[in-house]
Amino acid sequence: MARAAAGAGATLSYDVTCREVRDTTLPVERTFVVCDAMWQSDLLINICKLKTHGLTGLTAAAKNLFGCIAGLHKTEYHMTQPTVESFSDVLVDIAKLMSPALSICDAVLAMEGAGPSHGRPKALGLLLAATDPFALDYAIACLLAVGPRDFTTLAAALRRGYGPQRDDELEVVLTGDKPELFRGKDARAQLESLRPASFELLRPEDLSSLQGRGALKSVLRSLQPLLRSRPAFSNDVCNQCRTCLRSCPVDALTLTGKAPTVDLSKCIRCYCCQELCPLGAVRISQPALARLLYGR
Image (cartoon, rainbow, N blue to C red; front, side, top):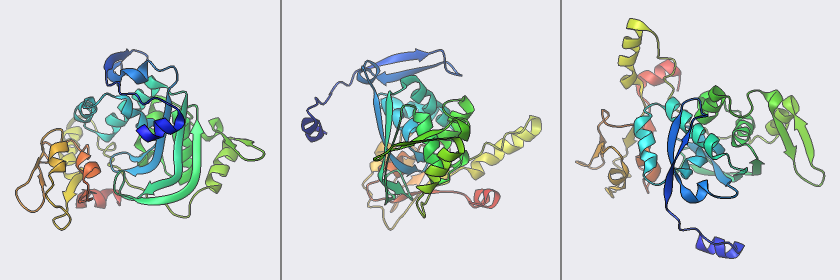
């Protein structure tokens, strides 16, 4: 980063101070602890990498702004928002609060498969940008033919009314010698024309249908632990480096054999263990009952 800053004639910021910011305009009033330098900046530019993510399916413009939350305060949101849906609502509220002037997505070399740390490089050769991070995520969904169910921050933005809600609200400019503007169905068609022949997506956990009311709600709630995804550790790959134990915010992991074991009563499904494992010894596993019910 120091070399990149020097090459650009910029100054690298080492400001690690933070501040509480309350936003009463969001659907749910929230107070976030954000990095002071980002909050006070004259212009905030959001640069993300297009890649898969075990928790949210994809990570792009909106989720990237989670980086504005100061340091270890990020783990608090994993702990207080136990479902993928509620956590995704928080992510898009942060993106709405920070409102970057420009969001840029590097899809020149994207990632597919077991993201966000152990997927495979996927050359797409694309650079995408928008003044609205939610519009950029909507366009990425069109590009990869992924629906809200498998792109949970997009689903949250649609629930919140952030960004485009329908194709007819989408505008796309293809740059080149003669830039062209496309709207609505034509915009989607242009994005679809850029779609790669294949792109391995992840399927995030979806228990939103298990709600119900009254006695049924109690029954469905009792079933949820049997359906929830969980980290699984490979005895063959793990070298007992303990990175996952140190990164687990709720101390749900213990190392008593060749690989760690997880206490599912403590696990909050943040998947920090999977993201930070240097060897890729952790995968996200779905119980057989969930695969049977959801066809995953």
